Figure (cartoon, one colour):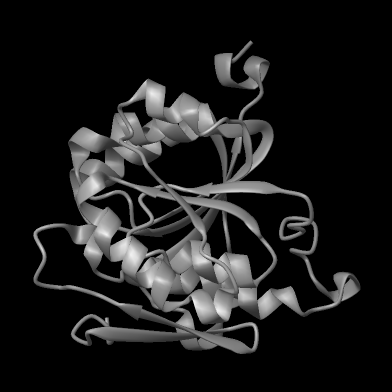
Length: 227
C-alpha cells in the first residue's frame, strides 16, 4: 500500500483535505493509517454528490439525523472523513493506548472539521463501556479491524450490541489472517445480512485490489434463528 511509509497521510474529502500523522514505529497497529479506511471514505465521497435518481446508494448514505460510532478507529480517518460527508453525529472509539494518536489527529484536523470530534475508550469485551456509549446507533463504522482470531468474537458481539435493528455496519475489509477471516465471516453470516459493494463502484483512485467495502445489516430474529 503506497501510503504506509509516509509519516503524514493527506486525504481529500468533499472539497476539503484531511491530514493524518501516523506512527508506524508504535507497538500498536492503531497508530498507523490502514488502507481500508481510505477506501471506505472515498467510496462514500464518490457517491455523496451524485443525484438520487442516478445514485444506487442515496438511501444507504443518507446521513441526515443519524447517529454513528466508529470502532477500532485508530487515527480517526474513517470517522473524520464521514463527518465531512455529512455523518456529523459520530463518536470515535478505540483502546486506551491508541488515544494519544487519535487525540493528536482530531486536534490536527480541527480547523477543517470546525470542531473536536467526540471520542471514547472502548474495549470490545467490555459490556459496561459498550452500554456507556448509549446504543443503539444507526451506523457502526469499522475498517481494518479483523486481523487477530481471538478478537473476532468480541468484535462481532460489539457490533451487534451497538447497531440498531434497522442500522447498518459500514465495513472496510482486507484479509489479514486466514484464520480470523474464516471465523469472522462464519460468525458474520449468523448475525448479519452481508452485501459486498461491487469493486467498480469504489472510487477509481482508491479501489485497491485487496480491499473491499461491505454493508452489514442485522438479521431479524426469525431470520437469524432460522425459524
